[in-house]
Each structure stands twice: as structure tokens, then as C-alpha cells.
Image 1 (cartoon, one colour):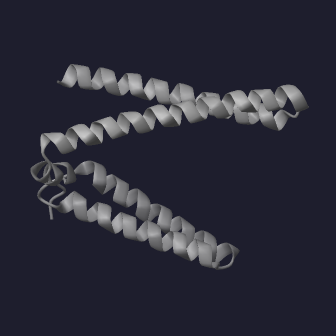
Image 2 (cartoon, helix red, strand yellow):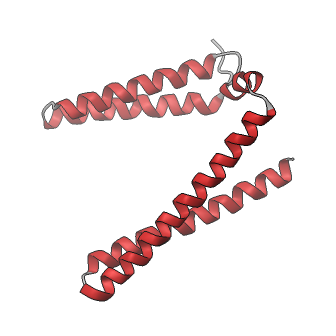
Image 3 (cartoon, one colour):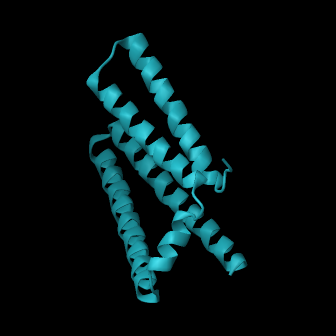
Length: 138
């Protein structure tokens, strides 16, 4: 069998390695239902990814045949709106956490605010990198 798509192949291998880690962890610490459910979900995800790695067409090619320009436009617009809403919610959470720190002087509020600010900054950097990549590609 020939590996036709490398990204799903390595994702599938990573899922199966994590499955093995969860199983070993549950054997060492004692089996629990949540660990076994997590291992089953990871194994199923890994199997699906490996199936996509060996298939002739990639998922993007199969979906591209079935979609028209309107569906692609709607998907793009909904993705942008989702990103804007998530960015606003994260920023609002960071500001509210800073207000919580200002009122209570509890360090937990500051940790939450810094984490949310870091996520907003990381989203911005990833968006810039993706835009630059697609500007050069197309």
C-alpha cells in the first residue's frame, strides 16, 4: 500500500501512539471507564485518518467535486464570522479577568487573563501567517 497523503498518515500514527499511551496509563493506574472511552475514540480517529492517508483522493478533492462556488463562499464567510466572534469572546474574557483581578487581587484572575491574552495573540499570529501563505500561493 502506498501512502498518498502524508498529513493524515502522521495524524493517524499520532492518534494510535496516544491510544497506546492511554492504555498503558490505565493499566498502570487501574482501568477506568473514561480512559477506555478516550482510547476507543482515539483509536477510531486514528483508523479514519489512516484510511484517508491511503485513499486515492484527498478529503479536499472529494469535497471540491461536490461543492459549488456558493457553498465555498458560505463556508468562508461562516469561518471568518466564527473567528471574529471567538476573538471577541476571548478578549472580553481577558478584560473581565483583569477587572476581577483589580477587584479581588487574587492571582488566579491574572493567570486567566494572561492565558486568554496569549490565546488572542497566538490567533492573530496564526491568522497573519495563514494570510501571508495564501497571498504567496494564489
